[in-house]
Length: 571
Image (cartoon, rainbow, N blue to C red):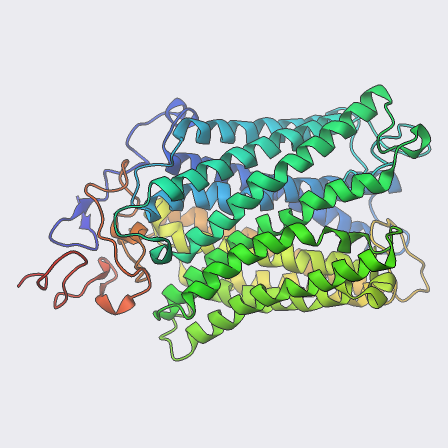
């Protein structure tokens, strides 16, 4: 067996790991091992991402010509609804916390598992149940309300309105997924509070843990609001009780208040974990101590708190009072401050750093570029005068995708590449990785930057057709072409990652030179993560490591003492 590890005096056998500790499908499906649960989440989320991506390509193909290409209007409504619903509830929200977070968080803490392993497995099965209900929405007549389930579309079953029989299954699925999210958040909060090793104070934690912690707070506090709202919607739909339906004496604007009180924090449930990944990627691959650690840590908490105060900026045109609109607009601008703090500190970290331009670092750079555009275009939508013109146009679609899909998903893919050697024990081909990034980056920007042009010229979103003489088609052609390039980039990425599992060279324990605790165990990790308690030190002090070889990766410098040792190793 090959022996690899950051501590050559106490090598770990990489052939004895969580992947082959026990064999058989049942040992995976009912495992309590956080690493296996994280891998199952990852496979499930990527499968849902494929389905959502197919719907996205159908939508873009439909809009290639003014009169539509492949669908009628009802089919188009179903396609963009299912694309949005699956991407938000089944992909972006759980992708980092449930998938990567489940795998990495306990190892970063030097723990054997999360605080509540059985609850962790139950959360995964709740996710599967929620996903099955979304499939049920397809089998029971479809869903055409948009991913927001706006009333009166979702409560009115008249044929001329067009809402379909899949509303209750889809709403039930989202309700169940909410419980999965709440339980995962609770588990992570308790794990970070109770399972930190001796010496790991709050300000010695990796910034990834700070981001996951802030996200978990949002999951626990905000998600119940969505659950109650969707339960009321299902009751109204099933029994005709007037809550949101104006024909029954209800108020559709009340639904918007309830929905966005959750859904704007949900925006940060999606983006905060991505920011957390980028903090670690930039520090590790720049081989430089993170700049402004406490500012980045506190900015995550500040973003979480601010996110509860800005839901009204989604409703500037809904009839709110002018005073309320001004207040929500002002608070919306204030959210830019903690976000800008992160970007400034990332750039300062890279200054005079020894940057490795590998695939994870390229995705980190792509994130900063895309997130900056997403943030700056948010100022147009937070400004009352311009939002009136841009509201419900393709400008909103572009902004939303730059923040959610472009930033959150790009960060997730960067994190996946960063921890891929740790998850699988194999290295992927860097040349293919860089090619995949270039295709994804170009495809994304061509797809969605052209939609800013569409929105500024008045193209409304959610429309299956558009006037021939409006000048919209050229931008739709660009956007559709970009979506095909983006899809090719994702397929290339999936291809070389899959190939690495079977044909990639064996990964060392620490291929990047990371200092957080997950790089102190073998790749892939042992079943219990560590054979003995790992040494806790400054997780961003990279000066104590040196490059050894491709087989051994980064190892501890022989002339320095490890944390907890009084004399240099080997003295």
